[in-house]
Image 1: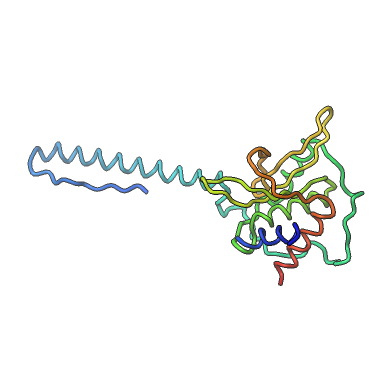
Image 2: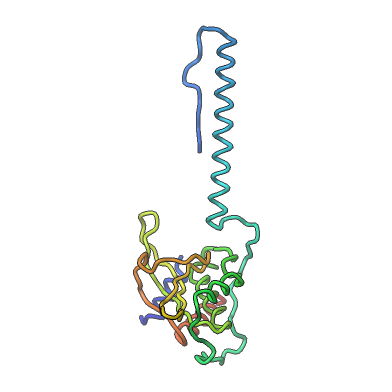
Length: 207
């Protein structure tokens, strides 16, 4: 199995409770009532805080439906004979890449198991960058998440920002700048390899 087949295989494979434990047998009923009301207020406040935290978590993790778009598999080019054109792309400054990411809508897509996963995000972002003339690569990586090792895809952009030349790593589902050191690289697809991989993936998705 060559590295493209391996990449395709990796791409397509994928409370707060409370209760009373004791019944009050005696005592001042008024005082007890006030105590229970105070407890109820505390529980209500705790619930409000919990709901707020859940909402915040959903927002920052991109799990909210507002503004999201469902993306189904499609072919990138209606012309099956189209070939990669290296003359279209060149390195960019970091600000140019960040401006591109702000305009690109790939991060608004919704993850859907076996239909639209991390590989699709990276392919979409890479293709958009190619169309905009930005030099980028798709990187097949392993990462550790919640103490579990998993396969993932990211996109890196070639930056020439004098006097610094480097690669800017991007999480395609959120446009977050990430650290290369957080990943173990399995393979890298640039230029024509990335172009052909994108087209192959979508053809596989449609079959």
